[in-house]
Amino acid sequence: KLQLRPAPTMSDLKEEAVSDKRKTMTMVLKDTTEGDGNTETTEVHAKYDQTSNQSRATMNDGTQLSASPDPCDPPSKRSRTEPTSSGAAATPVLSKSAAKKIARQLRIKEKHALKKLRVKEERAARAAASGRDMEAERRVVAERTADGSGKLRRLEAETARFAGAKNRFGVCVDCYYGMDAWDGGSMTLKEVNSLSQQVMYCYSANRKSEQPIRLSASSLRAGTTVYDNLNKLEGFPERWRPRAFSCGAGDVDDDILKLHEKESLVYLTSDSKNVLTEMDDSKVYVIGGIVDRNRLRRAAISRAEALGVAHARLPIQENVDFNATKVLTVNHVFEILDKVGKYGNDWKKALLEVLPARKEVKERDGDGGD
Image 1 (cartoon, rainbow, N blue to C red):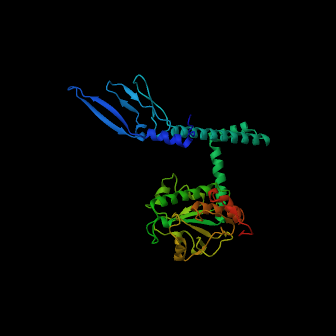
Image 2 (image 1 turned 90 degrees about the horizontal axis):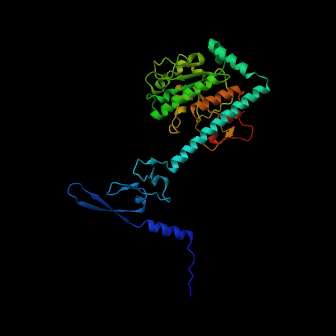
Image 3 (image 1 turned 90 degrees about the vertical axis):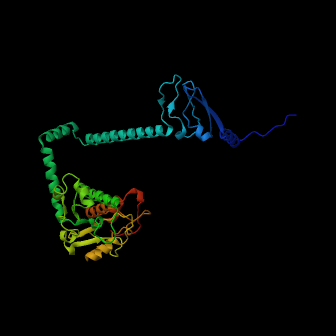
């Protein structure tokens, strides 16, 4: 009688295959030494994980035998060369991870190219629908570029736009925290470099704004990291000044009270019990240049109390909800203030527009603080 055994399961087959491959193997490599003819035999014991990564074994007759990669191996353990029968130079082969990375980069480039083409076609469609002649407009732009009148027109329009900034409220970025002088503890070099970037973002956002405001930066002194980073930009600060930007002469460490009247300053800090509801064009709102990942607690309100100036917080919790950290960057606070002034103290609209999507901002139910 035949005795029937139960069919092996997939897990049994995998365990058996792994057990067989894990057995210790012995490879005998013979190396013939020239001159005396002695033969030295070396036994190399290697496990499956080691032998699967060996690319070649050299035989005693000078030929090379390529070890075939095991399909069970991860891409990092497979041979990166294609074996050849004639012993010639092997052709490199990309691993699966490298091939996937290149394919992903190509897909991203193709996606960006298609998006650029789609935007171009939509722009042309809108122009045709409105009766614009794109070819004629391109010729006019080329002519203005050639004679320099186009640049002159842009400068005149920009000058007229920034002329109205003197009638709007001001924003001052207090870079005092980026210096070693303040006694609350200095920031790290990485944090100070990040502050320099955020000051640049503020200037760029104000330059692109339809209604620019007065922007200033205090405690910018030659030799400090923030000033040296900004000084690497072409035209700083001479070309920045006509665009509603101002900074001190750099002769003292703390010059915020030299730049602005003490009565006009309102220091923004989340630790304040005062809530800012309306923007006052006669005030200068100070943003503490702190990049500390919420490490330097109560630093801003301590600074405001030491200066003896008014302080307030933004009405964030009265208008929006979000689960992420409530700490905002300097440039985000600047953009919020700019939008609030533009939208007529509509804090909810400004916050929803400026706050990044990663914070998962949601509109708060109720009247809020508009």
